[in-house]
Length: 346
Image 1: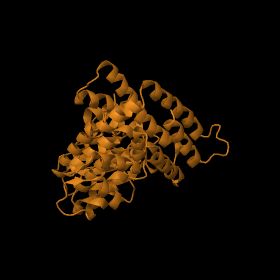
Image 2: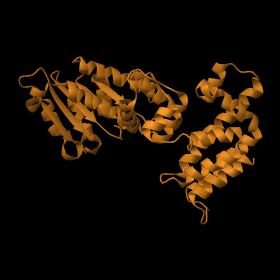
Image 3: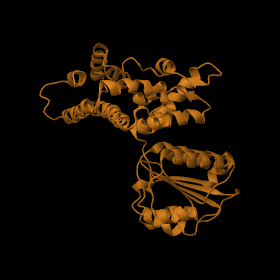
Image 4: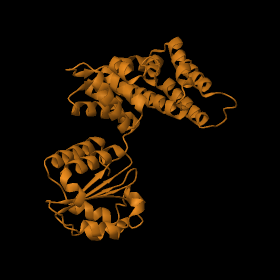
């Protein structure tokens, strides 16, 4: 079973900390859909494995499309010159036609060589010898994509590693802006931190708006909030704005709305059996920060189970339309407003 993002993050930060202290394994396999952790570990090893003066003779960086397993093994079996170790890095290793043949070297790797095999957006076959051998003799980082609904949690965790807190609505806003692109979040955060006052310990939604250049007023996050409250005028205005945006994608908007209403549905089911649930029960069912509980308390009154199921059926219909099905000449903005109006009238 694939590890969750918290386990992957912990493993990668442990590898990075070891690299800073000069502690290395003989072989690293960095793979998975999400390139953020692959890049993090690869960059840390490249930075700390050798001193700058040692790199000319002891560092080999090659690319999967241009190299064979034999060439990589030959490089890995060399001994370092005037250094404690040598480093061999294969980037874009998913392009190697003979990747599996590296298993031969990995069975008996040299202690004086650090071999890094980095597969960006791809994974080695876990049933085969190469993956199994590296798992036994070295370290495997399996960096799976973070799910859309987990992005605010990932962002909060990311900010904690920087000694910061981020307000729940700010984390949601950042997630809506960046989607599930972890590298984009890291870059936007670094830019923002340069502009925040020295000594800042908590990042607010207004900090995100001001420094990242996005508006909380017109976002899916605000649309779901206004739908929860059944504030028709504001919800329709936000829907029109969102639908007219250059990067608007109906399937992504429908997905965000589905996540929201599915939470309301689960919360409604909980209230039928437990009219006064404790906060930990709410958190388990809703999967959101307690900051948002009051919104869901209102939403579940406005959308009891029957209505909530009708909304979800409607979202299924508009997911189909958003992917090009039976829309006629309707624009994305018109579809978004139409969907919002129908939800409000359920």
